[in-house]
Length: 562
Image (cartoon, rainbow, N blue to C red; front, side, top):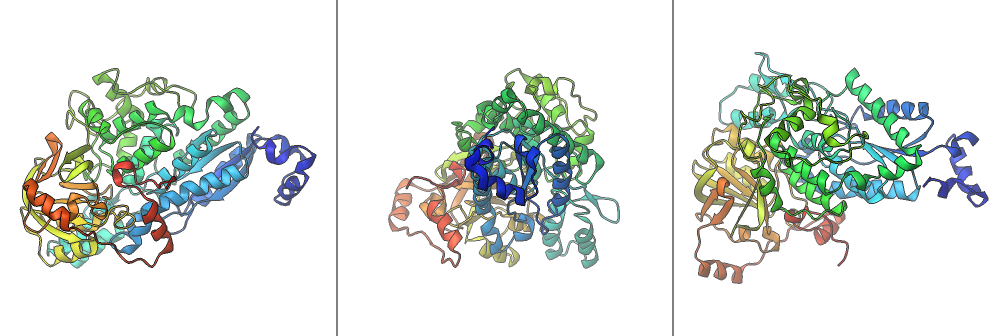
């Protein structure tokens, strides 16, 4: 076993002495050592109860004759960090989490890992770190939050709360209605109840085969979820105690090119967050998979969009998908369009993907549509190109309100705070294209989410008549003609930095086009005079991040070779 390096032989006497200080006995040194990577933190609704989850998992690990060692990562709540400079730290936290997992697991030579993520950047960060370690690993998330209800019985969630601010600003709802939404949008622990970034990633882990069925949809803090924790803990012990299985189920043997492509296909079928593009590109690099941003459109053309979940369809939430058959039912239905939509692949459960889904069935085709009645014949995400996005930009087509064809005049803001102020002051009118720049990975730095401005636009009734483009990114709760990840970003001289108020911007989602209608001579003239804005920073960590980060088309990973 890998852990023999720190626990076997007379030369490891001091090491065993330290282990004994933690409570280990003679019998424990012949057992596998399993890292329990926990993202417990009290400020995140999806994480404040994960200390109790870890206790359940450790209890099950001990019962299966292995030794658990719990360690923690940091976590940032994107909702609480939203709309102010706290969001600058969200995406960079992914790199800290990945490095923390890699550091603890490799420094102590642990044999296997069970990871307990749930929200925001924590899921991809843990996956990235685990891939660097490449030992058998099972991911078991804390689970989604139940949906909330207003006093009149309407289902609501966090997206409702953000949009309610814009509706209140526009005088469309009262103080009392706003408070009703505030008090009921997030009724319990768990990752926010729609197909936002957290639940998108928790769902895609099922598609990648690194989590057991139900990981993305079984509600948090339920007996059904506890049973999932125990199954995951038992499974990792079964693997690590078997010499052959320990080699066979190394993470990179499961999370390979097939797994990455399967994840993107399921993402398309379920209309996941645009953030999944950013994270899956980064995960692909850690898995040594050559996957390019442009490959996403090819997948999208062949995948039917068969499940709409909030924010794309405000009445449907993760608990509804669970009751309707879960992710396995989605995947089984996807295969009915063609045998090559998904690729059979090993999963951590020991079954192949096709074996895992063979008995799955849709229990409610109003929630998960049949393949002959899709929301769309193409997937819920698209990559746009043109002179405004030479390296690509991302849109959640599943969340579009309107036709996906838009031409309008640019209203430019250098940063999210200026955009929020401008929207509230009425600077944005129907027919405009809001441009928010210097919010990319390098320009932010940290690539803020734009849920506040998009929610204001939607809440003020402009959702179908205004488009928004940014080199920043969006929350999974964003909807409308909202285009993010524009690359190259403004801070590296991208065309988005050269735009001026009044420039005509053309968007055609169906033809994958994002361009500004300017003569080439005018573009050359602007480029020659362009000096990008470089924001002053007080944070040493953000300064390091800005110096090392790549743009969104490369997954915003950190450069290792300078």
